[in-house]
Length: 270
Image 1: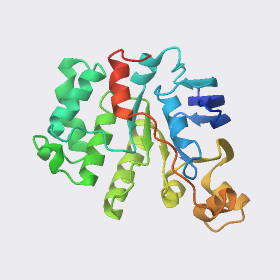
Image 2: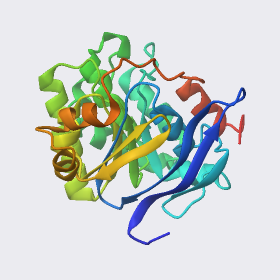
Image 3: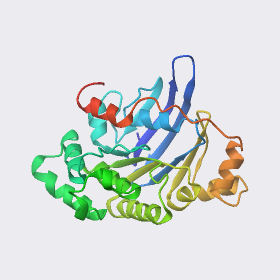
Image 4: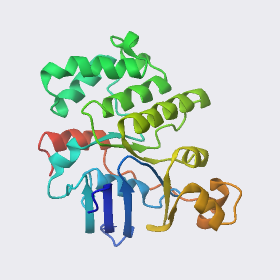
């Protein structure tokens, strides 16, 4: 794998029982310190790809490298190198914000002497420290998203995966989250891999974009280059030109993401 890549995928395929090929021989590289948008219609293979990248699903064939690690052969080490914010809420609403962070620190093996300081630093960074003792069930959707991002960064990962992180949030909160993520990318060199249905987010934030449709990558370049090659006025117009206008079914969600991750760390699955 080239030293400049944090994520390297080659000929990645996932076929489920019954013969459904959700991901069909895709290949791409994500340079270290870049923001990479992975786009596609519902059912295109985005969620299955993220599950393979984050050790929740084993590929049928092909290779993945995360920071030089094989997530199939070394899943525990690979998990230590990335953080993830799931599409669906994964916080424990009955716990406080601090307790959610503390539980995650233990899950990822953050050294106990460092835990309190890291939690405070990140919660201050996302402007939630004053609510550290509040039950998460009292938080707004935007506050929960900010806490999930802080939690995903708690073990200082090199890569942050974000699966539709701003769905359902108001424009002010979406803008806040993206300003925060871009600051982390610029100041710390954090590699960000995200999916979204908001094309303007990808056009504004991503250094590179890959579009997947029916399990295959059909375009990969800078947002401006994809727009130009499609002869479109915007990335949204280019996306529709490339993938068509028909409404798609949602991709099957499969397993509960956070439960699977917890089981994996506890040795419940490889």
